[in-house]
Image 1 (spheres, rainbow, N blue to C red):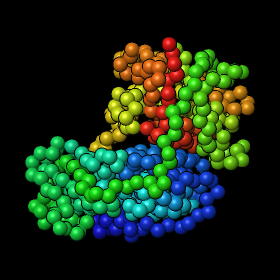
Image 2: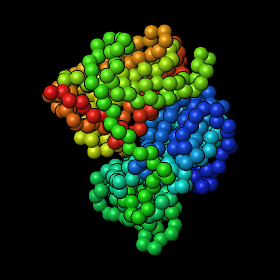
Image 3: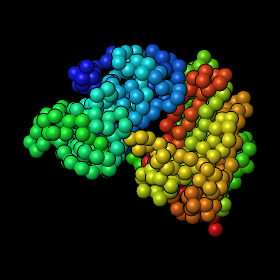
Image 4: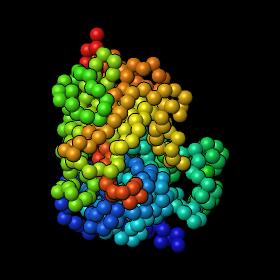
Length: 435
């Protein structure tokens, strides 16, 4: 059984797949997942962007959990699908569009990793226990060289018998510890000069005696996108919006804008998988205003989410501002934190109200029969410790995710997720003069 599990997790062994003619637009660094075979029903889009070693998706979401049957894959990336959340269980790699993912991941995938195709697979270490396996990845960002796992989880604790190292870009060390929090006996693999990537712990007197793990990237070569897009100029504008969900005449004339193609839910009313959309940005002396217009209607659910890089350093960090607006649904002023994920640390968000401060801002969405519109505001300086503080001439990085669905209720809906604005650091907002 152990040998079978090891073979099923070798990307080089089963990395080939059927090639499909993709009608939808798929970027070179993008993966689109579908609920059914032949690219049908619920869909989400995932993108690898400049500065990323790999994209870690610890949980594909309730809509697609155990329901990924087909994939569209860009020419520069591959994707690993895992049975369980947080990269647990059996897994398989795909490097071309696939109308039916087949065994062992069909109707079983709960997490995934998007990686540069030249890597040959996701980068990290797989620990193999008595009854389960789990992959522990290196960090997403190429600038971060250490991934620490103070506990490997109850199902693997003191059961690990084999370690497999995946490091297609160069060298990587796995530091295994006897106890949690990096205590007790330590073993560093591979040994100096070692060439084997599948290692039995029995030969090191650490069989079934591992409780924590640290991965260290030691290679000189780092993954980069072949032709990274240039950093765009900050978007900015000056004006005041009335937050009522309506795009009133001349209301957004002073805004800066970013046009993009939003991924639409599969539905007979939409002639294409993509729809034209625009993000509007402006500020007055008190507030930042955000508007998102999608030139399609008929969505029964969804939402727009903005994650801000408060200190504009190019990374997402706990404590940074988050704004969310459902369609239809409530406005949420939140903050990034790391309460999700065990043993893998994931970024999450929660509302300021739950954290004991205030909801600052407003948001309303609408469908006027011609287009769908999300309209939000947030104070430039609310004095809330969980909010950003912005001044004239300052910049703030941001990422936006747009979620659109059609259907009677969430459990019966088909949906699409558009990561339409690249991750934090690649787009910025410039605050116009407020004095």
